[in-house]
Image (tube, rainbow, N blue to C red; front, side, top):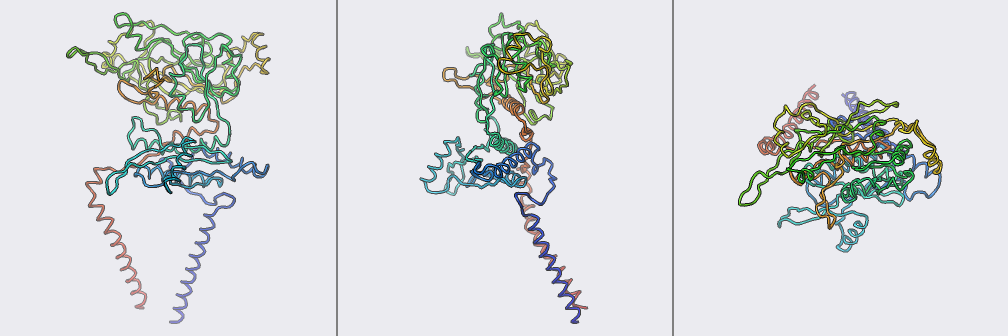
Length: 593
């Protein structure tokens, strides 16, 4: 009997030692050395919720190398040995903010897993004495951090509270505020939350990129050819201002496009470009410059129909002189208009009542609503984009160099092309219901072209052009480097916001249709396009990342409430009883021998 007991005691001791050894191995494996984790994991979620995109991995690695090299090289370059992220999303607030808070924490944990240079902490701005809170709020407002107001239910009723859905990324004396909550606009609360969570990785990665590069990139809008004015592009400029510097450039008054300009936007030119201006654009592209072309091939608008003879209008072609340049880059804008059954609405008078005109909304087939089928990050998960009087883009042009063409947006299958001259009238609204009149689509409306671009002036350069390049220390290039990018859009008004109050320079959000009161994704598309053109690290992939929120079915939870309450209450009790009974029977069986 003693032998049996000693064997049992030895077995228990060995089992205890095994658990202790496993405990210390677990601590060792989950610890970090030099900021590097010595464990891994597998992300089995459908939407890869716990995996960072390659672009984010790349910028984190670049930033890690920069900090390590600086700390080993020049002492005192950095005030901190890493990046500290202060998240202001703490305190009492509704459940949707709690979900945003938890998603932010999970993401920052992923950042810390990838690199040892990041630490974070959550902070409640409203915590402290009234004087401390006031001083804190004032200091935050100076860097652009503003609160969001909401109503919170309390015992005594409802009270208005403020929450700061922001994070501040600090490094080497620099501070970059990150707005964690997207604008609501026409979206519901759940859609806003979903969009905000989807963009968290992109926003933090972009902030780290700014700290790494330490230079604000520049976007320049051309002027001098009847392009969209600053007021017409006010909302787009206002949207990109936190991330980029922007301004205008007159090619007529300049001899070259400075290399400090990272992106040129040509938005709805109305008059021809000279050879000198085209040569500037061509050599800018040859030297690595990137261009977004927003081109109207046909001069027509709703106003032109309103003021046309007897409600009709014959649109004119717009000759910009850029046609040979586009052809050299493998693109051609067709001289026609696209009609689409999938279109936005505008009002027409259908009668009068009491002397007042009665308005009704009709689909206007020349205002295409396009949804992209592409998985490219500039258009992935985007809502409908509203194109006004677009033309077809011909992508079949062959070039000397290797170019990749990606159709970002197309008209629907139920669309057709009308070549000019054609007489337009508002009677076109009555044709939308006949599918037989809308066959031939889809037609490309926005195209991304990437690769090595050939120069239009390869065999056409004059001595004067060559001398102009020599005066600024440049050589004539017949090919661009690999990695060139250009986007061609067959609607110049895609970047134009509607002006609501010209006197006070107030505008509607870009993409807002004041007739059907809907916000389309024009602004999101252009911002994505600018981000992609400027992105050398692949961060745009994280902007297209889609995390699905598994929201509860309210009706189902209401119907099955009692069932799940009983399951949660009884199953643990039954499980404990079964375990206890099993243990009792096991002891009885062993000690009965």
